[in-house]
Length: 385
Ligand SMILES: Cc1cc2nc3c(=O)[nH]c(=O)nc-3n(C[C@H](O)[C@H](O)[C@H](O)COP(=O)(O)OP(=O)(O)OC[C@H]3O[C@@H](n4cnc5c(N)ncnc54)[C@H](O)[C@@H]3O)c2cc1C
Image (cartoon, rainbow, N blue to C red; front, side, top):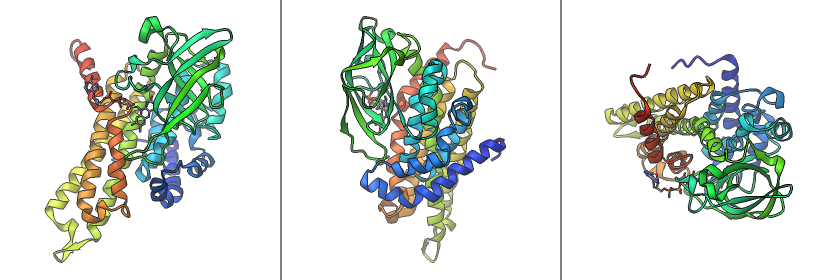
C-alpha cells in the first residue's frame, strides 16, 4: 500500500526497524522469559535518537507528531511490543507538557526525555478507578510551597523505572473529577515509593508497578496547566495517544503474519507446503487484509491528530479498537497456523498472542471505547462531510 510517507517519516521508520531487528530480536525471548526491564534496549533506542522523535526541535527533539510516533511504535512492536510500550509510555509521560506545560517545565524535562536519559510515565488508574477514571481518590492538598500528595496508583507502565511521572490527582476533592489536576512527580521525591511489580500474561519485560504517595510534597511549579484541568488534560492526551496503541497492535499483527507465512511456506505436510492449501491461504489472506486495514486506519487517525482538528476522539478510538481486535485475531490465527510449534515458547507467535491481549484493554478497554464512539455518533447532528 502507498501511504505517502515523507522522506523523513520513511527514515524514522527504517531506523526503528533496524534497531528492532538488530538489537531487540536477539534478546526478546530472554527478556520475556526473565521478565526483565529492557534497559539495554532503551540505551540502544536512545543512541539511535528514537526518543527524540516525539519531542519538538526546540527541546532537542526531531519535532515529529503522532504519525511519527506511531511509525516507531509499529516497527518496535513488530519485533517486541513490550519494548514498544516502554517507549510509548515514556512519550505519554511528557506529551501533556507540549500543550499545557510551562516553558520552564519543558526546558527542564523534555531534553532529558529526548536524549533517552530518563523515561516518563503517566498515572491515572487506581484500584477502584479503572474504566471509570473519575473515581480516583489520590489527593493533593494545597500546602505552603506545593501540594501534599497521598494515594496509590496501580498498573503504571514504566513504574519504578521512569524518572518522571505525570500523576492525575484530586486537588479539590469536593468537586470530584472537576477538581482533578496533573502533577509532575520526580522519582526520589521523599514520600514517593513503588509497590508491587505485576507479573503479567504478556508484555512481560515492560514494568507495571504501583506508585505509592505518602505525604509526598510536590513543588508548586510542578503543576501542569491549571488546577481542575487534570481530567481534560488526561482525556485529551488519550485522544492523541490511542493511535499509538493502534500502531502497537498493527506492528504486532504484522510480526505474527510474517511468522505464519514463513512457517506455512516451510512446513511440509501431506507432501506439500502448508501454504499451498486453500484453507491456509484463506486464513493468511484474511490476516493480511486485516493488518493492512488496521494500518490504514491508524495512519489516518494519526494524521487527523496531527492536522490539529479539535475533536479526534472518534478517530482515535476507532483506530485503537479496530487495530487491537485485528492484532488479537491475527496473533491467535498465527498460533493456529504454526500448530504445535506455534504453541511453544521457542516460536515467537506464542509471545505475540500473549502480548496482543493488552492492546484490547489499556488506554480504555475496547468496550468502553466503543461506548465513546457511539456517544460521538449520537452527538452528531446531520450528515457528516
Ligand atoms: C499492563 C497494563 C499496563 C497499564 N498501564 C497503565 C498506565 O501506564 N497508566 C495508567 O494510568 N493505567 C494503566 N493501566 C490501566 C488500564 O488503563 C486499565 O486496566 C483499563 O483502563 C481498564 O480498567 P480496569 O482494569 O480497572 O478494568 P475495569 O474497569 O474493572 O473493567 C473490567 C471489564 O468491564 C468492562 N467495562 C467497564 N466499564 C464498562 C462500561 N461502562 N461499558 C462496558 N464495559 C465496561 C471493561 O471493558 C472490562 O472488560 C494499565 C493496565 C495494564 C493491565
